[in-house]
Amino acid sequence: MRYLEQTKIENKRFIDYLKGSLIFVFFHIIGQIPLSLYIISQSDIVEGVHTQQDLFNNLPSNLTLFLVLLPFAVVLPFVYLVVTRLHDQSILSLITARNRVDYKKIFFSFMLWGSVSTLMVFFDYWISPEDFTWNFKPLTFLTLFLISIVMIPLQTTLEEIIFRGYLLQGFGVLFKNRWMPLLTSSTLFGLLHLWNPEIDKLGIHLIWYYIGTGLFLGLITLMDEGLELALGFHAANNLVTALLVTASWTAFQTESLLIDNSEPSLGVELVITLLLIYPLIVFIFAKKYKWKNWLSQLTNKF
Figure 1 (tube, rainbow, N blue to C red):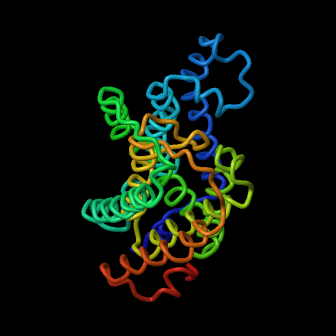
Figure 2: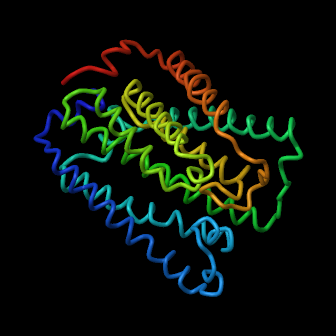
């Protein structure tokens, strides 16, 4: 059984996926209540602050990170309920077309991208050390590490299950093919990043990075018939971002090992990531897992 086509064997309706999505949004908003209450309680900090980024820069970073990620943990149980009750579908079928989740693939993808992105960070540090501040504070970093290894995988797992799982399969029900769900879910993934502070700093053209990342994650999901590679990649990406390097203008405001003080620019790095690094990662996956029939895997009707 192929990943998207699993929905064909049951009487699925796209309207049910819209209902499920609204449930996820509702409980995500509920999960934001603790952060909202905490911000209200910090009236002395909130006063005079004009942007969300300035606000987060003035709040304790570890507590703020936990509260920002909490809504994702709140939503996860309701994903299980929606999938099993509303759609009468196993949670396994939302993750993979295999008989069981392939944790080796998650681990390989995590280690591959974790290693590559870590090397990229330290290469930047090596060639331009003046752009970085070493920020290691043992107790603070230990707290950050513990929060990150628990909460960030919950966040990235939820995002993958919803965008490359739930919505990809939902749009499959609507369009009855593979390429339109890939394009639609990737575009939605990109558009939901419009509120990221990186967009304010680097400009609207950064949206192509998020859409491109969505296409990359969707492609490896369709080619591999499951979320495992996307799950590992996304978790590694966000953990490296939280633990190794951050900047005053990024979505994650953490006490990471390095603080990037350089003035960011959009251009060469975007092109290199989308047109060189991502295709190289796809090539490695394709060789290792012997992907074939690319055209049918990405465009087939059902």
